[in-house]
Amino acid sequence: MRRFSADFIYTITGNIIPNGIVVTNDDGKILAITDEKISLDPHIERYDGIITPGFINTHCHLELSHLHQKIKKQQGLISFIKDVIYTRNFHEDVIHEAMKKADEQMWQNGIVAVGDISNQSISAEIKQKSKIKYHTFIEMIGLDAYKAQEIIKNAIDLKAQFKTPTSITVHAPYSISKELLKELKRYCKNNENKIAIHLQECEAEAELYKGKKGAFLDFFKDLNINAETFKAQSKNSIQAILPFLPKNQKILFVHNTFTCLKDIYLTKRFELDLFWCFCPNANLYIENTLPKIDFFKHTNYPITIGTDSLASNDVLDILSEIKVLVKNTKSFTTADILKWATINGAQFLGLETDFGSIEVGKTPGLNLLQNLKNGEITDKTTLKKLI
Ligand SMILES: [Zn+2]
Image (tube, rainbow, N blue to C red; front, side, top):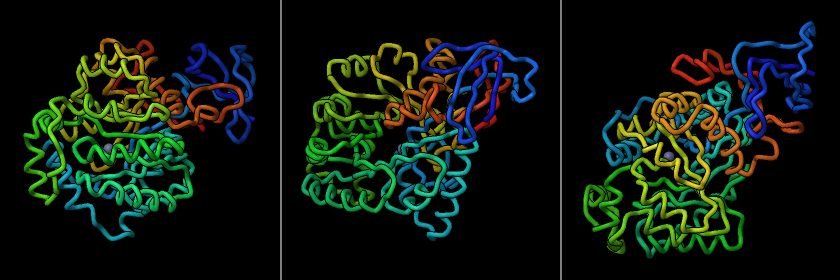
């Protein structure tokens, strides 16, 4: 049995407990949470700072870990994607080694569960052996409407190669056909299948959707992508795809860098089980832009946090994402953002029975955050993984 105490215990779903004590068994299962201070108890591990549950990273691409520091910063999304496509093929051993290191880095940084996008099965074994709980999103890409059935068939085959939880998703509005989205919706009718879609990560996505114009057309040409079946929609990507999304599945919109208030209000009209995911460091890395975080005060859907991959981030560290978010919002506090980093992500991944909050019976992991200023996370804040 272990007893942890700090200035504040952020239980997340309950009260913030000053000088609280969290009692766990040796496996990290929470046995009790109390504010009775047995100050002479020599077995209490007492810390300055706050204790939170382990963090949930709802967006990563483990299989791109070997591209760490390989892709030039702030070149824009289209250039970034090209670089990833042209440079991602390394020897399997190099990719394995990089994924192993990334997995360990996330664990050390207090991340206990990850939603991970995969285009291949190379990460399957690491996920199975990891201390981290993974949910893999098998990602479908394909702008050619005639290929939709073949693409989903391949995704179902790939899914079978993972022994940890998986579901099938589509990449982003600019890389899929309406038919592929319809195939996914059909699949979702009979299968539990959460979805994670990259959304509004660059301005060119809206240009493509509104008028089949802009930088994506050159991109398609350069990469020999057949865009003939893609039709202009006279509306932006979020407006175009919302009617085609399943109502019976959890859906994560990832990035939302160019999401405007009108888009946020529009989502309210659809009865979706929707979550928004912010990956601010990746947005700074790729586009040098951030989502209008304060706009999301007007959403009725939960927010989560992702690191994206090491191709677009220096480090896989939710605390580092929180620091950017805290600095760039006037509407949300550290306490709000800690919910995004914990229980909201756990709920999206369907792990809230064990993760996301400090409650008796759960095994959420415990993080100690130190060097806060008046209870708020700053650039100086540090993390120590307790469990
Ligand atoms: Zn991504």
